[in-house]
Amino acid sequence: MSHDEGSARPDGGAAVRRSLQLMWGGAPEPTRGPKPGLAVGSIVRAAIELADTEGLVALSMRRIAGALGVGAMSLYRYVPGKAELVDLMVDEVYAEDAAAVDVLEGDWRSRLEAFGRQEWAMYLRHPWMLQIAQGRPMLGPNAMRSTDVALRAVDDLGLTEDEMLGAVVTLSAFVAGLAKSTIEAMQAADRTGISDEEWWEIQGEYVGPAVVAGELPMLTKVGEAGAFNSSFDNFEFGLQCVLDGLGVLIEGRRAAGGS
Image (cartoon, rainbow, N blue to C red; front, side, top):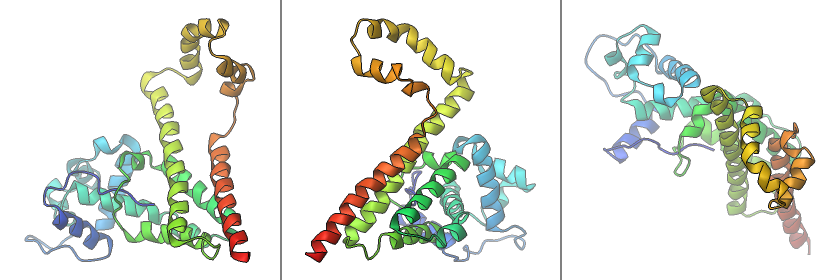
């Protein structure tokens, strides 16, 4: 699924239209000066590389221009500002898996499994994507093609159109939510210099007395079973739970349709 329009846009609808014009192939408004020597695509890719390395906080026209070996003001002849650039970056990221997504095969479950894993991998490649609000989507072409393919997986299964969209949104929300907490834990280890093992050991010094006193019986049970230290894959577990729930809905609709 695609992202929210993100940062503030003081000129409202005009700014949204500028992003949509750029994403859907419209030529930028003509500006004065010499003939352009860059391409929007090269600017977007340079911005993505910077965000991948340092996060959105590091993103600026000056930094991108430096990576491309041009003056910062020259970038504005191609992209009106940072908000529009981020919109282009997001849609470009969705283009990375476009070929693989478009040929998803198998039944509805195997296709949604593949779709969910591709979104998971996307967030691990581009953690900054999780810094962008997801409430009101900017409908870029690559993001929309990705969603369209996911909807095909749940077509003709007896679901209403609202349920079809809800199924895809629910899957994407699960993937994004778990990716956010997973990546935050990884970044915290790098930022603080405290490994996960050290993190839990330190907390155990304070939680331990409550465990001994029997105040946390269920946490004690799963802890003694080694659940907190296992290599259990929460993503795969959660993915199967989401699809199991969707499967119950689909079977119910099929049963109702056949009665």
